[in-house]
Image 1 (tube, rainbow, N blue to C red):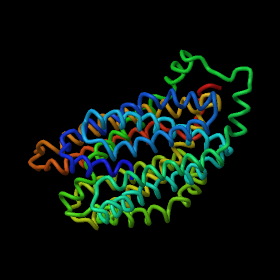
Image 2: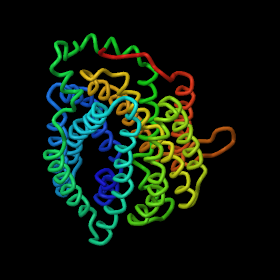
Image 3: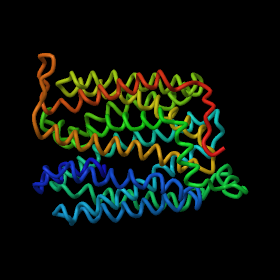
Image 4: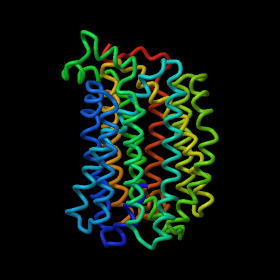
Length: 382
């Protein structure tokens, strides 16, 4: 809801031309801080970062209701990037440290289910809130309340550290030197590249997908949210099963099949022109995501020793963020400029981000099949 509310609000105050800059500001800050925040979680515990990040986003959402200029919006989006950097690597590392390796894909699937549910329901609830009130800032008040609720839940129910994390923190070699850590990242160039390319594909659509639905499919904010609901239902029905399938198939095969489905779904979206076609393509993309992402996060948790798990998750998150930043800037730029003619086929500016995203995901599929192996013996921080 937080991300979905930005586009129509900027359009309402005449700042659509600054959309790419504003979205990129959030992504750049999140990208730069993911690895440091992950390291802080490794050293000082998971709970403080989740609670602190949620409280920051609670305040920035309130600030957005009063922001009318780029100079006031950019600092708020930067602070929101700090919050996101604190929350997401910490959550993934916390789940990874809470279950044994053979159950990690299922555990990550549970995390992914809740994430997908929130992403799916958020735009609908936010859209209804805005449409019913006739205001483009009403949903920000709801966002603020939800982040406050998140902070309260995390404070009372999130363990400070898992048993595995706690044991690593109290070991005689609990912390890894920065130089040694950076050198060890040379073991996973394929994972770093896949993180970049996959989120470059996602980033291309982040700033424009809601505007595309409103401009090209002629949907209201509520209509856009309603289009996402069947996608969420289709994805939700397969989410928890996907985690068990990942445990049964093995993490490598689950990642490969999942990435292949997302690429196929994105190609379908690139050739879609009415809302039900986009809904079907979205279901395929979502099914691929919920199959690949839990197995991917479990694979990362296996490769990273507990004492550096947050830092490794954060580093790969940085690669994701760089890809998302470049993708978001390019997607917004293409949507506002001109199309492309290639091999005699003209692609309009509204559809060009979908085609480039499909190409990037196809490249991810090829690299994933070629490089990710079952029973990976690489280990960072061991």
